Length: 82
View 1 (tube, helix red, strand yellow):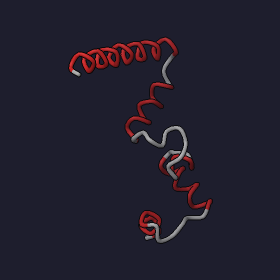
View 2 (tube, rainbow, N blue to C red):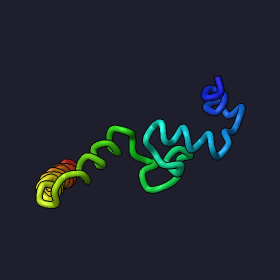
View 3 (cartoon, rainbow, N blue to C red):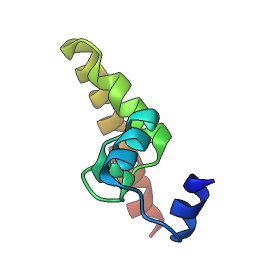
View 4 (cartoon, rainbow, N blue to C red):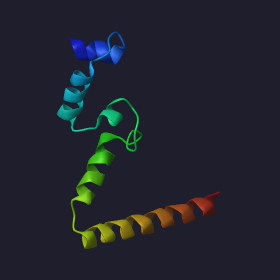
């Protein structure tokens, strides 16, 4: 199977094939080759960020406020335990 050869590095897909693979998985070519903004995020994280982007601005602000509060709490706890 060609995908296996791509994964093992035995073959390199054409641009057209790479585009089809990226489209199938709903990612950009940059992401597919490990470049770009989201390359270091796992699929679950990227999916959650995409879902947040679909929310109304006010709903997004609520989520970000919760995230900020949780991150601050973690930073304080880490500082106290260090």
